[in-house]
Length: 92
Image (cartoon, rainbow, N blue to C red):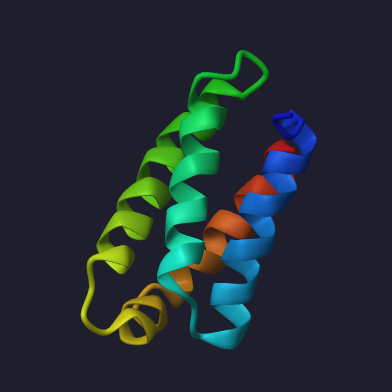
């Protein structure tokens, strides 16, 4: 059973918040971000203003997943992570 829109948004926010606060993460989390974003992109409930941000987060997760230094990748995106979490709070 697929998770509901609200739960997907919360999952996205939780992973990004954890990356931002802990400055570390896992490849599995990056892969989870990608799956959630793909689902949100095709969901008619997703605010059109959010879709550009989702594309940016998707790129971030792909780069992180393929990085040899994932924690360094996360640390170098602290400002974006904070902004994304703030933006998600605004639109959700």
